[in-house]
Image 1: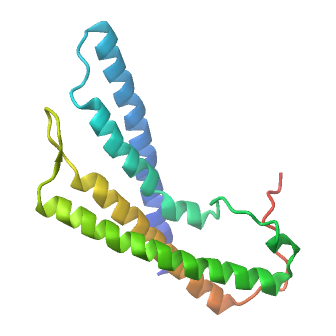
Image 2: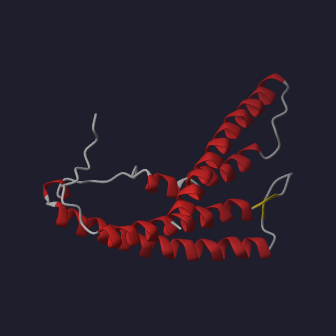
Image 3: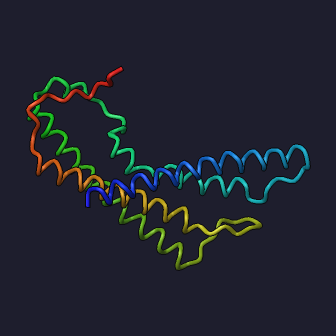
Length: 169
């Protein structure tokens, strides 16, 4: 199960990278169309807003996998291995609670958007549910990643070596 969650985390990160490339190309085409031909892509701002949500939320689990979230470790760096282990496990438990709430809420939001056929107002009538669904997918996968990290932490227990959260460079 650990490898499956990691595989999906990486896949979602690659999808987010593809979305980023698409956003860059889309904005370039829209700006060129606006300035050279006086015809931008219709609903370009709405489409970008929706894609930015996808870009932000899909790679959440990959960031957790890489342990790349921002963290303040002023106090935990002074603790021993067992203290750091307790803080890490407590952080994972609190994270699961809050991300669980966001996941449930975002599912309800995406589902009601899908059922209601909600659209962003504009000429293209872009549906809202894909962007709202990406919040659910991203937070849901992060929840699974936090859960697998918690289980792995319970199985492995505290390390005998003090872990420094300081970067190596």
